[in-house]
Every structure is written in C-alpha cells, then in structure tokens.
Image (cartoon, rainbow, N blue to C red; front, side, top):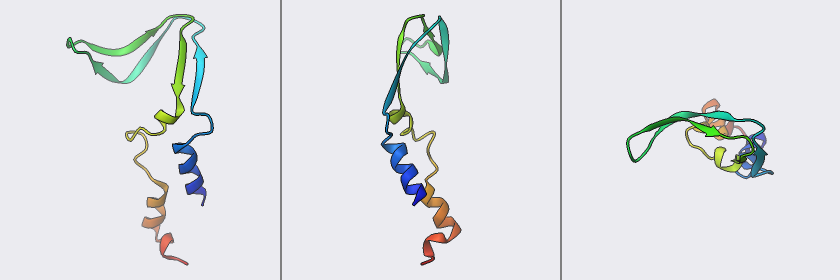
Length: 84
C-alpha cells in the first residue's frame, strides 16, 4: 500500500511546480549537453539575477530516465504478491 501511495504522489504531486527568483547571476549545469540546430553544444544555461524560474515537479517526476524503478516490481521479484 505504501508503494501505491508513493507512486500516486510521484505521478500527481501535491505541489505540481515551484517558482523561484534568482538572487544572483549564476550558471545552471545540464545533466546532458544539448546540441543546437546550428551544431553548437550547450552544457550550461546562464541565469541572470532576477530571472523567474519555474521548476515543474510533476514533469521531473515523470522522466523515464530517472524513474525506471517501479515499486510493484520489487514486490513481484520478492514473491510477496503471491502471498495472501
């Protein structure tokens, strides 16, 4: 039951996004470089002071790269689902 609750909140978080304002000039590193249409590679994003930033918790929690593990799979592999 706990895994069901956790998966439900992961997929439908109580707070879907948070907003912040950059307090100083900064660089935001990317986990994977982005190749632009012109062929340039971007590995970080410049964030000037005062920039409003919206982080989507809901979108982040749905990234397949991060969440390949599913709680139910651990129960199935442990044989718990076969117990009554």
